[in-house]
Length: 131
Image 1 (tube, one colour):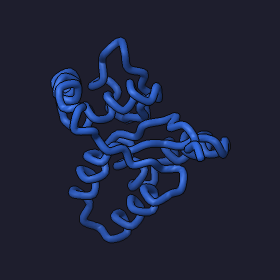
Image 2 (cartoon, one colour):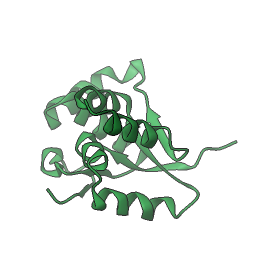
Image 3 (cartoon, helix red, strand yellow):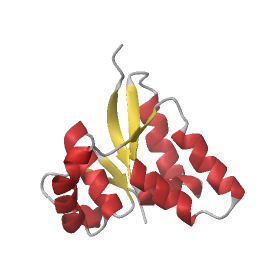
Image 4 (cartoon, one colour):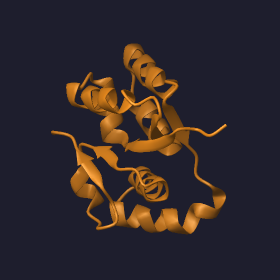
């Protein structure tokens, strides 16, 4: 059985906005999920990074609920990806953004971010959230 395609990558800033009940993130996800064949992805390191900064139980539950959503695919890195991931880490300035960039390239899916300026590279498509 084939899984629906991942059509959007959420970075840490998008997850933080979602947890903070951002209407902008909610609208993008709602629009995406109107298509039953659509999924969104979150790299593992991004999920861990955001969970690590959340202290409020409700915020943690909101994040876990999103990550447990049937349309969410938590994206693991392959051990063979280390060199390309390291390159994207340098380009974007952090390992979590590097993981989003690599996932975006591999899955041909845009990145949803409130920090789109940090992904300044011609090969990346970013959907900017208002800051």
